[in-house]
Image (cartoon, rainbow, N blue to C red; front, side, top):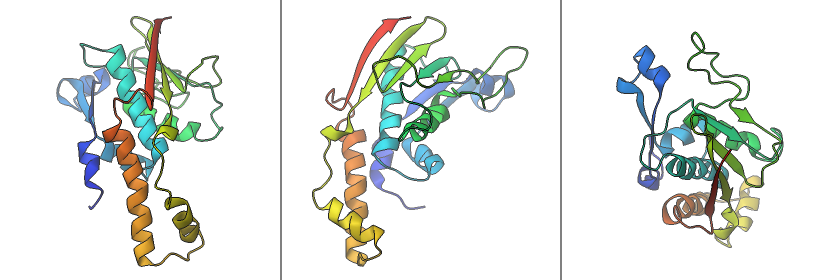
Length: 204
């Protein structure tokens, strides 16, 4: 399988999943997500998928500064409705990593390992998304601004040609490289850039 090599340079996200430990899926429940795995699940790599990954990574760093995050013990809220814009795409990425779901998640075993009712939409929050630790009620509002990482100025014209099936082989190659280069700039070059991703925490 061939893919842009920068995928391997994106910082991985490691969590402890108590359900995986209970069922023997992963030793001690430790599971690591890499960006390439999220791309496989989403079916593509774009600023939205990259942003959802970045938001989750930074939120978990903030909520668990000296611990490994606990999968299934994190609530996620959005101010948008589930069918607005790219909210669903972002939610799917965050679900894959945190385990939080709206109504479709695991119902639990004897009241443990419940994964549903941990994701909410149309909430009165000021940010792109809010992540909350269930054990401490510590939360963090995450603000993602991909407009700070501008695309190559030639990309718009090439996209039009691509969509109209008018791009030649070289133009197709250039468009794909430009598209993924912007993703790289978001996830690798600007991982800690507060103009792109910023956080504000509190206690619920």
